Length: 141
Image (cartoon, rainbow, N blue to C red; front, side, top):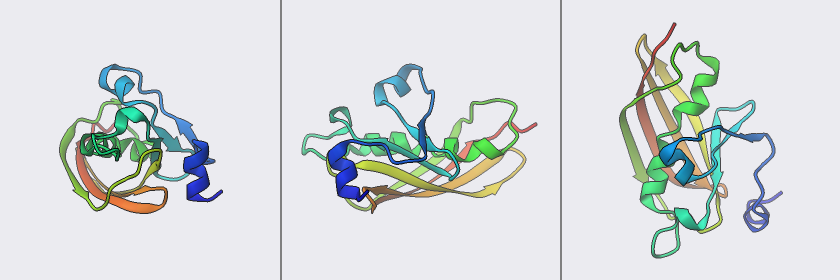
């Protein structure tokens, strides 16, 4: 299925399953999906993600970028599910049109005893719209 038909159909790409983020701000943001086998996250843009000119709001992009660690921690032994954000950087490269499938291809750069260093390229229907990196506090075993 092409990126444009995905956007038109409003589908979630194969291999993605909804995360259970059912508290406070996460509920207001909407569903975020994690790929079952790859270190990817994604969401389908809705009207509540748009800024006044009809593209993805920068705050929505930053909020999504702050969830990158959720694509990484699946394979890491962790004794506490909360991984507080120490630092996050978001470089806005291009606008994401309304209705786009937003996807982060996430990489674990380094894991220390107490920190996870993560980076990603974020795309809208396959076109790069952001580059981001984050540092998260890690509570290992």
